[in-house]
Each structure stands twice: as C-alpha cells, then as structure tokens.
Length: 75
Image (cartoon, rainbow, N blue to C red; front, top):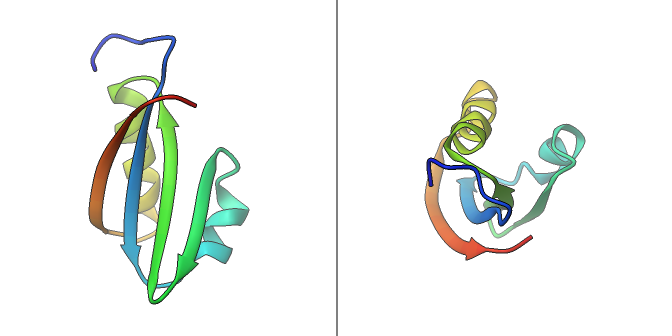
C-alpha cells in the first residue's frame, strides 16, 4: 500500500464509546455510525501517509481503536 493508487483502500475503525456526534463535526470525508456503546468509522485512504494521518487525527482526540479492518478497494 506504499504506492498511491487511483483506487483508495477502505477501512472500518471501531472505537469504544458513542462519539459519532463529535466526529461528524470534524470529519466530512468518512461514514460514521454510533450505537450500543461503540462508534464505527469507515474511511477511504489512498496511501500509508493518509492512513496514518487519519489515525493520528483520532489519537489527537484521545480515541483509541478497539478494532480495525481493511474492507478493500472502493470509494
């Protein structure tokens, strides 16, 4: 995944806690669902730098993933 691609990779990241309302105001380029004590974010990234940048943004908000899954290519 080091080489930028025309087809972004999609990831599903789950956090403990229902923080969807907070994330919705900060991230316009992701899909967010909250419920049952968890928040799920689905994001498309083009390369490693964008992927780790996204994780850094979550870390800056003191959010730690409890699950991270690659969903594959697609927008």
